Image 1 (spheres, rainbow, N blue to C red):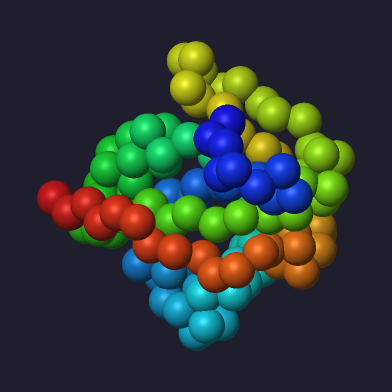
Image 2: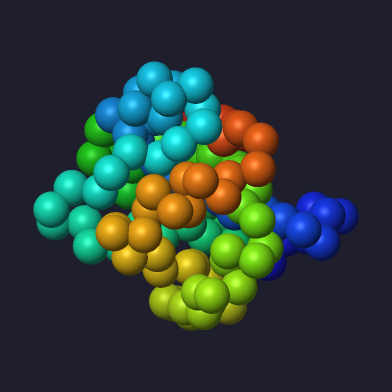
Length: 120
């Protein structure tokens, strides 16, 4: 997990495709859009390296472009979710149930930033 020097918030990363990013942009880079019925969880990741892997491999394959975003969430909110290891050492995610995404959005500190763009 990346430290941001602020003990009150946690830095999260999210690989995303162009459709999701447009919805984030429409919110003023303040909120993640609701999950689709086939998306029961929202899974931000703990590190930029893992987010780049997903954006570069999966988002590019699916839509021709992938983005990596970074955002901060109040630590008191994130402390209720365990980290899930889903592969190699760096493959760590939080699994936020879709029905709790609005609460996560309410706990974002600052704006959602696009920090990387990957194309085929």
